[in-house]
Image (cartoon, rainbow, N blue to C red; front, side, top):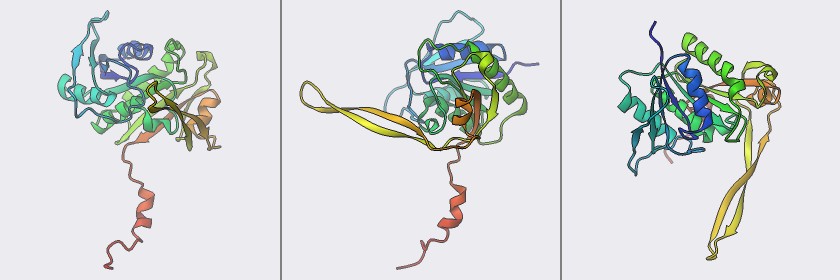
Length: 259
């Protein structure tokens, strides 16, 4: 059987340990092509480059079976360039990550990792974003590799509904401490933000964004609950952002009546 063609990307940059671990797992499953930012691009969301040039460079590597490129743009740029300039056919799967840090709950909105996966989904490619709840550069990704492989193989085998990608988050635990995998909904949580206002030596104001993550959701079917209780969370994410349940209400508005 022909090996599946897998696009690997991330937002922490092509040299990040998280993507190197993901490449290791994917190379056991299929033919791997890596297109990732040449520098960290965290919290870029679905940003694309339109006013600057984009550079795409093939990079040397130790494994001749894996093709790798770095890109001067955002994670979404990486996916767009891969689909339009590199591949001879549509990839069978796109995986993004493994992110250094959480992309659970509301973080999915800001995440460059997940935006790359969403862009692949828009292109009709099954896609998964993987994140580990450890922000350290030298985070240990070994305990989650078997779970990544299992979720990836199930996705390739069973497929995903049209318009859906997966947001997968891992607790920072040893492999034997992880209780299992749970299909979840996104918790209703938010960042309570503050700005640390400072002054430059020249007296000009500048700001550092700070804040506190607040989970207001007490449900036991959420990604936040799963992670806090030792489970891997898998949230199906849709990129059709229409609030379908609101259409009926909006149709009661007198929008077409003449004043």
